[in-house]
Image 1: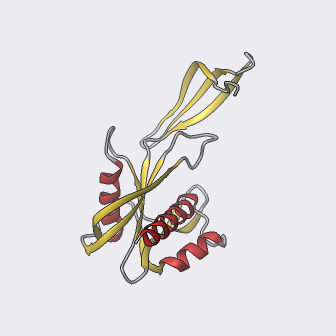
Image 2: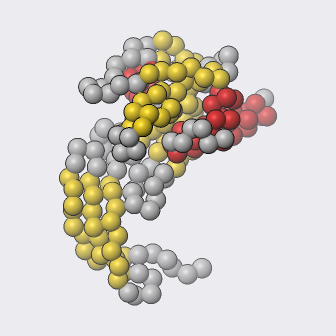
Length: 185
C-alpha cells in the first residue's frame, strides 16, 4: 500500500467563528508537489435516535440557514467544551431539543459527514428507557418535535425523503444495531 498522507507545510486561519474555524493550508502531496486545502475545524457532535418500546422515534423539524430550508432530523448537538464525552452531549441534546431523557444510551457508530472540507465527527447513539424531561431550547433555537414510527423514518431516509446526512446515517446505524440486538435475543 502506498502512503497517501499529505503533510501540512503552513496554515492560515481565515475565520475564527463562534462554532467554526476555517483554515487554508499549504500541503505537500504524496508525489512531493504542493497544493492548497481549505477546511473547517468543527468541535464534533452527537446524534441521537430515541427508541420507544412502541416502535416510535422522535425527529425534530427545524430551519437550516445554509440550504435555506426546513429539515426533519434526529436530535443532535455539538460538543460545547474540549474533552466533553459524546454520551454526555447526547444526553444533554436529547433533553434540550425534545424534552425527553434516557436511562441508557448505546453508541452505534461514528461518522465524518463532510470529509472533503471538515474534520467534524458525529457520534451516533440510540436512546432507551425514555422518560419525560424538560425541553430547554438554546436562545435562537426553534424546533418542532415530531413522533414518527421508526420503520417509517428509516424508509423515508432510504427513499430520499429525509436528506440530512447525519439523520440518514443515524437511522441506518440504529436500524443495524437494533436488528443485531433482536437477532442476539
